Every structure is written in C-alpha cells, then in structure tokens.
Image (cartoon, rainbow, N blue to C red; front, side, top):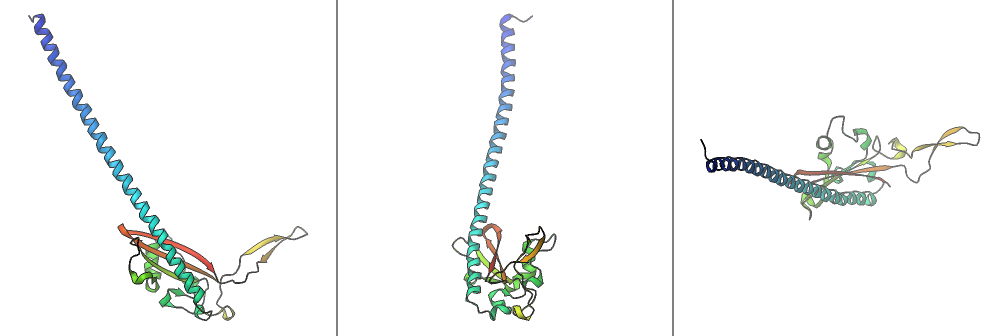
Length: 203
C-alpha cells in the first residue's frame, strides 16, 4: 500500500510528464507559425519586387512611344506611304492582323509578326532601369500607298445623329486627318520582365 508521500510523488511525476507533452506541442505550433510568417514575408517581398520591375518597364515604354512619334513627325508624307523596316514602320499594318489570334500570347505574336522589323532603342543596350525597349509602328491602312491610290485607311468614326423629324441618320465626322498609326512598344527587363504598351496617334 502506497503511503501518502509516495502517492504525491507519483502524482507530481505524472503531472510533469503531461506538462512536457503540452510544452512540446506548443513549441511545434509556434515553430510552424514562425515558418508560415517567414514564408508570407518572402512571398510579399517577391510580389512587391515583381510589381516594381513591371512598373519600371512600363515607364521605360514611354521612350519607345516618343521615338515612334518622333519618326512620324519627321518623316515625309511620301515616306509614310511605304514600308520602312529600318524604322520599324509598316504602311499596311491593318492587312497583317494587328492583334494575337485566339489563345496566342502577345510574346508569341510579337516573335511571329513583329520581331523581324522592330526598332530597338540605344542599339539594344539597357537603359538606367536595366530595360531594353523596342517598338514597331503600324499605319492603320490595308495597303501601302497614298490615300488617293486605294490605301484604304481607317476613317473617322461614324456616329448616329437625330434629325428634326425624329429620324436617325449616320453622319461621318469631319477631321483634318483620317490616317491613324499604332505604336506598339515591347520592354524586356530584369527577372524576365516583359511589358507591352500601345499608343494610337493621328497625324
């Protein structure tokens, strides 16, 4: 038969064993929580870094848009009626399809249709943000040549206007120029960052 002192000793020993198990469980839970927190912080930093690279690439695209506009402003009307591969320019941009096909990425479309006539700034050297900027210019016409020779260029939009007798008619807007140009800029940067920016210009 156990004495009272022996009974208390056994009871305390069992209690110390339970406390050890509970302490181990809490320690494992705290370790897992710490690992999860570290992973969350790393993921957040990675996302923030990727967003920063993407924003920097988009800002660098402005240089490509400005270079394209400068070409359009300085080129003669005769030059703009024919292709100029050395300047990334196509006089019949609408005829080749201006957008990727269904299921085709912009990168695949660029490599298949635009890579061979792109114009790259700074001779392909990265800018201060470590981005390489390339661009192409498409005249929104189905054919080369002037407007009077059947180039079939995009025209001003047609709008519906109500007349005095409550009838609607389609009216062509008058505009000083009906020739539009699309500048497509591709920017590649650090960590395989790729950004595309487009601008429509009327000259």
